[in-house]
Length: 432
Image (cartoon, rainbow, N blue to C red; front, top):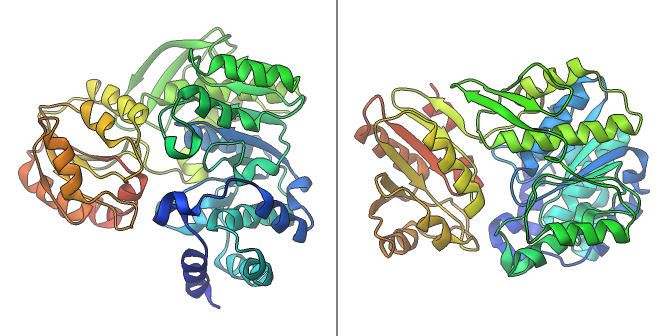
């Protein structure tokens, strides 16, 4: 198989959560164990950091990887899903895995794939671990896919575990209360492995305390010893001053979303844990890594402005808590009229999201081109029950085109609601 044939095989042969949802979710890690056993357990050959959480885990993973890279560590990064290129999921020092290595790995394990029928995610996790081992990374930052306890990534024993926060997402798989969701996320807490919790929440905190106590895992709340003193944001950077830590100079972030303030606290707590454990990370590397996260790791889609006059911004926020953070960003943004382009997938809490949206925006409902996507007409109907009326569009780029025609130079066009929707924005066309 060539590269395109290999991708087709991975997408079509293997159950793929992005496309079909719950049917692709394997509620155990037996297949991942079998795959890694066949590969001589590559995950034992490098140090790792494990990151879970409802929101922010991607940003935290990328920032940590950027800092470690700036500190001179050869750093692997495994995240999901991807936006434009499958290879975004697996990187070393920001460089994506080569097409040839994707093909080679898939061919090597195809007999085992035929035997045990793993999911797409299980195979990509094994691919990442094998790749990181083969290239002898010093560290790998590993983002969970869904949950934690039964996630395929949870075969690792990391140097540090991180749980960013708990919110309403994937309830049909993780549980219908925040306590149940927290229990699943807490599954990444390992015996005597330090854990950083990004946010204090009444429902989840006792769950994390109990799990950490049972595992004799030192637990730190990111905001216990540091807080946000101040921040200000312009179109290119977010500047954040920290209280209670040894960082006198404000941080400059190339991730502009104000919600990155909380993620920054989590990252700094994680770095403190690593340095306390004996890993050498200069302060200059921390500042440089934070300032150059997008450059170093290729992170996309977090309050990312693609064009101006009118401003076109994309954000992968897709659940109630994520949308809440985007709405906070809007309060700090100057514009005349908001043109809100939305598409969601069927298994998200669409009604709760719709209930939070600003009524004075002009709405454009659309959908990603995958089976899980909620049809734009159905989303528009749900919105109408909330008193929100908008146009419907078969494709996100059609919606952007109409919004561009309707908007003035000082308006804001925002695309959000689904990472898969953002992935279909024609970035080259709209940024030209």
